[in-house]
Length: 229
Image 1 (cartoon, rainbow, N blue to C red):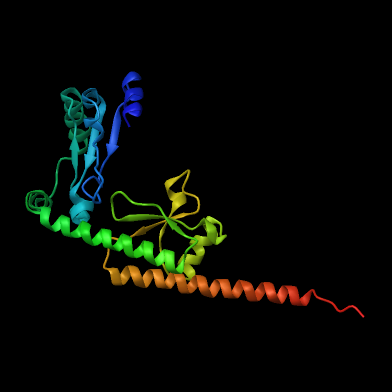
Image 2 (image 1 turned 60 degrees about the vertical axis):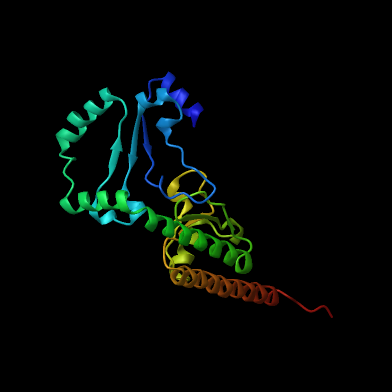
């Protein structure tokens, strides 16, 4: 990240850093805000965060934009914000944001403990029932990144299979552009009963599909056989 920042600094490139998941960090890891890597990065950075992901209040539509450099902050405040009426949060979102940041620490700690246990459950489930699928070790958020490429399906085939056969909607890796082929993103920020139910649906659908393919292959081989006399 430091090297990337240096390149941007050398070429006068403004960095808009989306750090909306920065509060959702698992034990043993630390989130580093871009503008804190080097003091000089304060002059080229706009840091975007929000309480929406952390405290599950996306419906209140509130966010935070941190601009350390005064010149950039004035340009943003009087230009982008002023001309587009962006600084008009509703009354509920203001109260909720203040409450979340001032009184939500204990709640967030409990949430992250639960999320971590869900990650452990998902990893154990994959190892036992879908050993060919591999979950990348997470460092934060409530989103698991799972490699399903070993299933032998294209991304389109897997998406259709998950939706129509398993009845589960995941975020396909290709929606995140290059490097996401073969992957699915699974949200574990939910009750474990729901996560377990969805994974069982995927497992049962895959088991049924595998059995169907084997039967089709056997039928194909049988129909092409012949007897030598």
